[in-house]
Amino acid sequence: MLPKFDVLQPQSLAEACALLKKHAPKGVAVLAGGTDLLVNLRLPVIPDNLPRSKNARPLPKAFDKPPAWLVALSRIPELHGITEVGDQIAIGAMTSLTDLAGSSLIRQKLAALAEAADNLGSPLVRNRGTLGGNICNARPAADTLVATVALSGRLELHSARGVRIVPAEEFATAPGKTVISPDEILARILYPISAGKAGSAFYKLANRKALEIAVVNVASALVLDEKGKIADARIAMGAVAPTPILAKQAAQSLIGLKPSAKLFKEAGKIAATECKPITDHRGSAGYRVEMVEVLVRRTLERSYEL
Image (cartoon, rainbow, N blue to C red; front, side, top):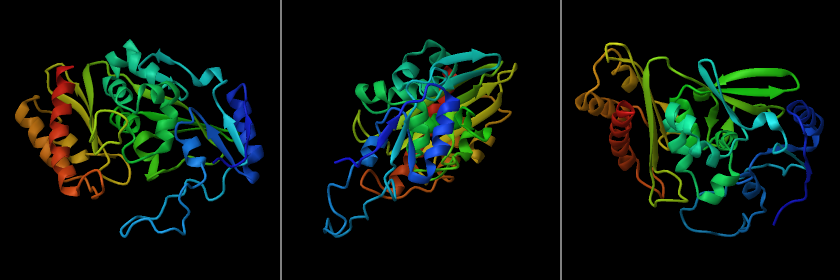
């Protein structure tokens, strides 16, 4: 069921970057929690040449050629943990989803991220799965990536060549595709902390309560000024475009105004015009557009309450 590969277990980030560079010619992949990678590495159960159904899409291929090496990141201490430094929170890419969901600091300062982690997969998946792994998977409905985009997260990418910082909204380029180079490792995710009154919220709509990919997911974040008006707003939407996207016009419509149910409802209507969903087995494009309007309103209301 699995192709043959060797597993390397570096003890430091520098060593991991060096191993990626060394083994790149023979094919190498980064192993975080493994909840996606090991599934993607499995050999096809249904051969490509067998008919499936009349309207079936071609089977996706995660790898053109299976990697000969896996660089496991679990033994690198600097990739684990949550720290608050000055005006930002830094989260190691290998921090588990369970630790994120259970962190009082994350629930207080980055509520949308904690809620996204809490709604992802099952307890078993959350125990193994990592924040960095879910972000790098770059699926249109990736729960923690949607929350990270709304929370103005920045991704710290390391390689033997150096370090670069990428805004979360610029990371995914297509379903499963990102700007990360083959020799780079996502080391940390950096989230700014507002000095003023701020709140955020995440909502995932799915066809069942657990172990499900979102039909639509939305994360919103608000910052209020000293007069109680909205100083900053960000609204991120997932499963309604090839990558998680920002509803920029909807967010802009909130700036400088007093929060109200009417204002949030209008923002939801604007956001619904900014998405471009498809119809698939989880839901129709029309249904997704309607749900964007509802979920944007709900997440904005909850962000204000928090």
